[in-house]
Structures are given as structure tokens and as C-alpha cells.
Image (cartoon, rainbow, N blue to C red):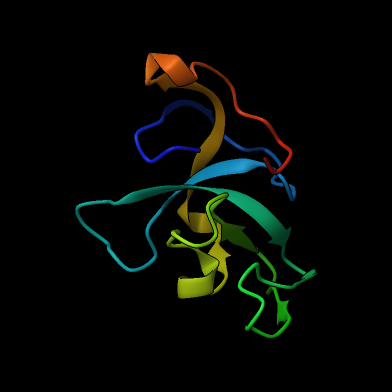
Length: 110
């Protein structure tokens, strides 16, 4: 998703690989800084980060591994490690801004 996209959110009952989620930055407590990223893996899974120079990561329980669709320019789990599910705000369902990108957020990686 583009850096200026504004999505409509829903609270996630279940988070699966491929979902696009919004979460609070793990490095900034206040004011909140939000990130929109795609889930690459969930607690209990192994994931190979898109940055192929990193080793396989084991995701702890109650955590997710997130990555941006633009892997060369993304602040994600490659920088922060696994993200606690406590930081989740919701699923991104639709992009409403900018108007040229209006539409449903796809669950598959573009």
C-alpha cells in the first residue's frame, strides 16, 4: 500500500498471514505512531524475512511478523522483530485516500 493511503479498519478477531493490519509502533509509546503492514507469519510459525540476508525467524506466541509490500523501503519486523498482538489496532479493509487508490485491500501480496 502507498504511504499516503488511508484505510477503513475493523478490529481483528483472527490474524492470518496475508492480512493487512494497522498497529502502534513498538518503539514509540506516545504520541502513537501507526504502521500499516502485511502479516507474513503468526505466533508459532517460522518465517524467512524478505530481506534474504536475515536468517529464519521463529515467531513467539501472541506475536506477528509484519512486512511492507515495498521491502526495499519499509519499517517493519525486519527492523523491530516480532510485533506483539497487543499493539494491533485493526485490519485494513478498504483504502479511502487517495481517491485514485480507492478500493478493497487485497489479502494477497501484490
